[in-house]
Each structure stands twice: as structure tokens, then as C-alpha cells.
Amino acid sequence: MNVTLRQLRAFLAVSRTGSFTLAAESLYITQSALSGLIKELEKTLGARLLDRSTRRIHLTELGERLYPSLERVLHDLDNALQQAVAEQALQTGLVRVAASQLLASTLMPDLIAAYRAEHPTIDVRLVDVPVESVMARVFAGEVDLGIGPEREPNSDITSTRLFDGPFMAVMPAEHPLARPDALHWAQLLAHPLITLQGQFTERLKQDLRSAAPTLVFAPTTEVAYMSTALSMVKAGLGVGLCIPYASSLVALYGLQMRPVVGPEIRRNFEVFTRRNRTLPAAAQGFLSFIGPRIRAMPHLR
Image (tube, rainbow, N blue to C red; front, side):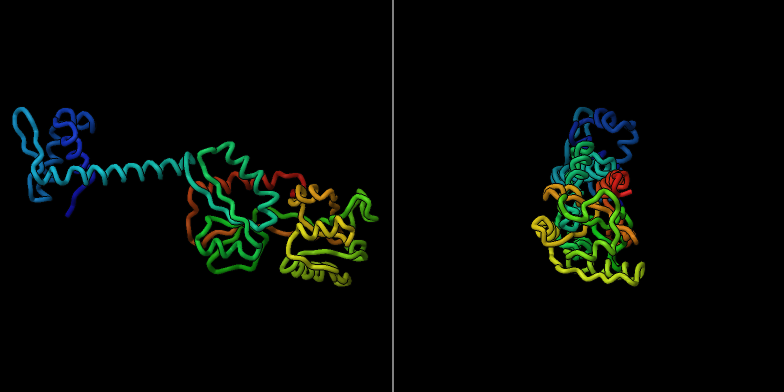
């Protein structure tokens, strides 16, 4: 059955106004074109929908049954199309972002606030997860995109570099290493070192082994959360490591950061999305918004 939207809109317009003249005006077409659409629809259905007289137009029994259903269906269709257009124009929409716990508690809140200030009708929902769960949330379709440190390639996930940053030593202001100049790894490794468990430490070991084979990287303590590491550093139990984006959290603990060189080791942070899936317009707009702002941050250049 080849029924067109133009035919259905023509039928609804005549039913609503009770007049071919008014219906044609509302659709910005001629009366003859309107009449042709109604005849085509009736021919396709094999039944009359309207009874015409010189004075009035009446719906047939079939027309009376079809009118409320078609009006509801086309109303829903129009709303869906308007919603799609609004989302493409970033007038409305939902962005779901998974971020590793440390990113979610430091970098992301200010970026989300800045985005909402410019796009108040876009709802951004942040999901803070353990770093190893970021890609899993993307794969499961629970979020539109994930943000976290680089991970091994995945056949179902596409990763795109968002920013990178150098490793920084974290210590109290009164620590012997707390001087304004850069700190060398050899100096740092002479002190108790507190790091994060998992790939944070494993990748750092690999990078240091490749760049400086003579260095022996052996952390004294490995913990699960940066808040734990910073609390231990504040208590004088050792020196910590972090990437500069965590500076706001470091400041909350009254600690300071120093760049570590000889060699400088940097860590990439990436955006994870489903392979061969188009991002919703709101998610793509959010990503386009935060990227330049992150890369413009002085300590991440």
C-alpha cells in the first residue's frame, strides 16, 4: 500500500477545517492539488473518506475512525522530527560520559560547567568509574563516550587522543625535594615512592625501562586511589606521582607538584567510542567543545 505523508496531511487538514479552501491554505497548496491528494488516498485505500456537498464536507464512517489515529501518529512523527532537528542544532539533547575516577573528580566538572553555560538545554551526565571500566561502559552502550588514559586497542572500540601530560612528583612544601627546578627520576627514586596500582605503574615501569634502562623503578607502596596516595604523601610517608590535570586535587591536600625529567615521561589520555557508530550530535558537540579547552591548559601543552 503506497500511502504518502502528503496524502495523509491533506486528509487531516480537510478533516480539521471542514473546508477544502481552508485546508489548501493551511498546506500552502492549491485546491486542485489538495483534491488530487484526497482522491489518490481514497483510491489507494479503496474506500471514500469524505462525503462532499456544495455546502459542507463530512467524514465517512471510515474517515471518522481513521482521523484520530492518523492525527496522533503524525503528531508524534512531527515531534520526533523536531526533536532530531533540535538535537542537530544543539538546542536539546543528552550526553553520557564515562570518565576514570580521577578525571571525573578533577578535570571534568569545570569542563561540564563551561559547556552547560553555553548550552543550557543540553543535559550532560557524568559517570565516574574505575579506570579499567571506562571502555566497558562504552562497549555496553551505557554511555556515548569514555575518557581515560590510553589502553590497548580493541576491535570494538575506537580511541582518539584527547591530551597528554608529563608525570609530576607530589610532595609537601617542606620535603627535601621541594625546590622550584625540575626533578630527575634518579633523585626521586632515592625516596619512598607511592604510586597507583595497575597499568598506571606497569606502563610507567615499561616507559622508564625503555628510556633509561639503568634506573630501577620500585615503588614502596601501590594503592588503588589517588586520594589514598595523596593522604599518605601528606602524612610524610613518601613522594607521589600524578599527571598535571590532578592539580586541583593536589592543592586540596596542601601539596605541591614538580615536573620529573631525565627522562620526561608523558601519558596519553584518550576518548573511547564504539567503532563504526556515529556519535549523537550532542555528544559530538560536547567533545568538540572540551578538546580545545583541555589542550589550551598551560600545564598540559
